[in-house]
Structures are given as C-alpha cells and as structure tokens.
Length: 137
Image (cartoon, rainbow, N blue to C red):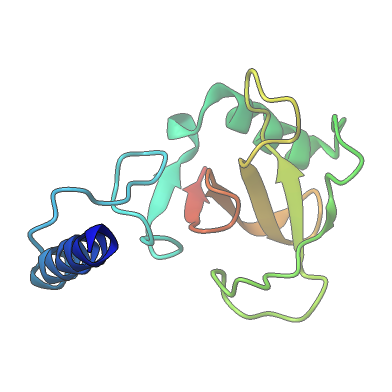
C-alpha cells in the first residue's frame, strides 16, 4: 500500500512540474557564462574587451600564430553541433581559452573561420560548443 502512495505522489509531482514548465511559471532558467538565457548563440556578438583575460590572450596568440599551450589548439573544428554557419570542412579551427583552476582544457574555446593568422570571423564559447558569440575586435 505504501508503494502505491509513493508512486501516486511521484506522478502528481511530475504532473505539476510539467505544467509549470509548459506555462512558463518556472523561476529556473538556464543561463550561459554571461548570464544571458542559454541557447542565444551565433547571432549575438561580444567585444574583444568583454572576453575574459585568458580569451583576449588566446585571440592575440591566434593573430600571432602562437604559441599555444595545447596540442589540439589550431586543429580543425567540425561544427558537428551546427551552431556556426555551414562552411566547407576544414574552414574552422579551435583554440583553448584557459580556465583558471581547471585540470583539463575546460569548456572555453575560440573558434575561427578562414586563414590561421588572418581569420575572417572568430566566435567565443564558454559552454563547450553549446552556444557561441561572434567576437568583435
């Protein structure tokens, strides 16, 4: 009998949660690194001066051709998430933006299109490719 009550309560709670989400009354909203709603990506831009210091350094290194701290920096970015405009394979390259305190490369990257030292456009992601913002130098 107790298990029936548990499942009935669980079912009722799930129904209330779904109703709240459907009506938009949930007070919890996913936010990106900048505090904006998650999912707002390539259509928005960010000034180079707004990037974290580490991002500004990475951008400068890109324009200077290095040096880069990680072997994967400068490798082809496949755009599998399709967050960036569709271009020919090999046009995008990704670079690590250091994350203080991280044991690995972290989630922050700059992805650039075009030539290595003279990219056409670069984008910043703080959430490992879930969203991007075009960098405005």
